[in-house]
Length: 266
Image (cartoon, rainbow, N blue to C red; front, top):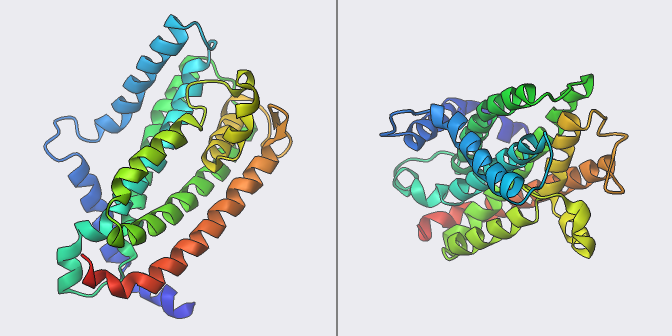
């Protein structure tokens, strides 16, 4: 373990440069640049609120906060995994010329998307204040689902980047999977009126993360004692945490086992 930690410290400056490069490339030739990190989720939320809140008459005064919180977390997971999945192939020129730990590429992809996600939380905070969300000291618990989200994104990024080297059709399959994950994450609807389909939603670890985040932000209760639709938020937290850690261990294993073969397939 010490060997891997020393190796990570040795290349931490390269990781930083890869993260900075990713942020710059994302907003290259954009006049507003990082401002889009704040505008995009806000504009998307306004569209969803207009369709589901105004036209269909759903939700209440805090419905935009409900949508925005789910939308931001899903977008972070979606963009992180999609870019991490292509990271090995996208950096094939560098991989063929010099040796650096290959895990830096998917890791940097997740990191810079996560940094942009954290910046976009500014809009969520402002929206919550404007709409009158009453914050309690339980707001500090939002860091728990955010950390779990980060771990799960890294785990998925390592797995997807490994498989995509050998099976490039995964890019198209993952787009379909992300659509399924989105609709199973209750981003713009409440799950109290969907009957038996609620069980399917509950087994989605990303929904558990979103639910815990909303609990700490909007429900004015603790993740450790609150119940959502008859299920303990603590149970959902433990489930998503165990899922993420196991997925991370599996991702590290298959990435390490196959990384020496990447050069033959990129």
